[in-house]
Image (tube, rainbow, N blue to C red; front, side, top):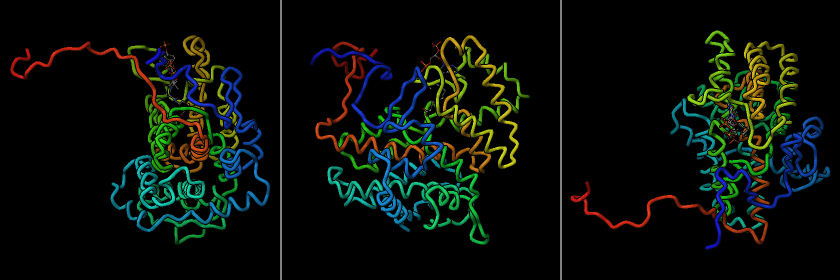
Length: 394
Ligand code: CMC
């Protein structure tokens, strides 16, 4: 049925029209709804950026107040969902918990979510998703360290509330450090959307069958988990720790990353689309230095990261292939300084990407001519052959 062209890994295939995120990989430009990422990172907040991505424009005050009020109202999770944590082992990866819990939300809110074409149910479902994800994420951290769950505090901002649920304990007074709140807000903004990457394409593909939004987005969470995608932020820190434990021998690891007989890659390096620099990485590197200084944290891994970057950027292999640090290279150092454990890094990425996934899903489902995603293939298996009974197979 017509000519099928092969585009392995979708290097050149536009899968959709989209008005959400503009990305120019040659110039290192990233804009959400027309606004430059650097300007949003400096002047906006994550919740405002979420509104921008989902609804298309920056909110006027009453619009934002209503949005914030609704998100705040939905931060708690059902006590029965909370009980699901009991079934997970203490050391289960928080991405396993996050993906499962988000999928399970479809069981709790079937009525409103089952028809994605219903605008009222759709609106409620996406507010629930955005509101409950930080609670789900923080609870999985509390479970992993054996602490009681800290319920949402609705007098706090979206980000401060997450920090409170992660780090406060019932017996002690807790004040959110504004430096930490600002740093996290900025990181989440920088992760909020990135057009048709692996997880977002997954959300669109699953959503295109009109599966409910929780099912579609939990698929995105799972796609993000892989080390070539969002899982890279955890892998970067593990790599830096490994380099440190091997005596800080940067050269050895650079050589290993170049060696085609080794499967090792420099984690946090390279990008399918950015070929000169990743604008997010630039901002994160600068913020990383500032945050560590403000918090008075010294991290020897930052030193190793900077040496590694310098060595790689001087190396012909990386220059020729246009491999630069990406968003995941320095973000982990900030998360560490804030006190977020390494296994939670990809969860942080998922919390940041949530409005992007929601906006992309919404754009698709609201498009009356959107079709079910159904790629083709070029078959390269066996030609027709007769069935051979088991006893006659040689
Ligand atoms: N270290 C060493 N060599 C690399 C690396 C790396 N990090 N990245 C790419 N290369 C080489 C690759 O071996 C290939 O070499 P050759 O042409 O000799 O075969 C060439 O560069 C092109 O790489 P590719 O795998 O064809 O490029 P891609 O566009 O398919 O992959 C990537 C992009 C991000 C998956 C890849 O660069 C990578 O694996 N990086 C490390 C993982 C990482 O940091 N991922 C986070 C990406 S940004 C945030 C996100 O998406 O979540």
